[in-house]
Length: 153
Image 1 (cartoon, rainbow, N blue to C red):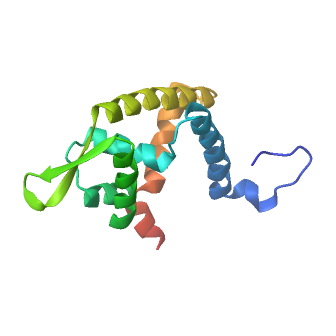
Image 2: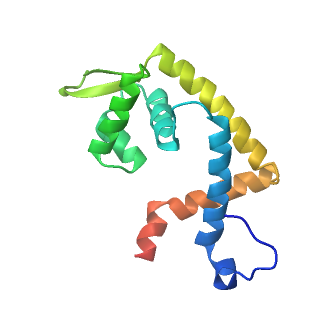
C-alpha cells in the first residue's frame, strides 16, 4: 500500500493502524526479498529462531511465545521436522512432553536466513538513524505489550 500523489487520505492520515500497516507491508517486502526461493514465512522463521534460542522449549511454550494455539505450534513443528530443521526429544522433566531442538541443518538454515533478513531489514529501515530505530522499536514494544492492550479493553 503506497501513497498515490494527488489522493486525499482523510482520517487515514491520523490512524496509527494505517501507518503501521503501510510500514509492515514495506518490511514484509524486505523479508520476501531476503528469503526469495526459501520455503520460509515470518511465522516459520520466528518459530525456528525461538527454538534455536531456547533449546528444549516445549510446543506449548512455543505456541505461547508465538501467540498461537498449541495445535498451530504442532503444525509449525511438524513442518520444521519434515524439513530436518527441528527434532523432538523427550523433555527431561516431563516424560509426556517433547523438547524442541534445532538440528545442525536447522541451525545452519536459521543462521543464514537471520543474516539475510537482518541485512534487508536494516536496508529498508536505513531512512532511520540508529537512535530513531531504537526509539521506534521501544514504542512498538510498548504498543504490543499486554498491559497496554488491557488498558484499551
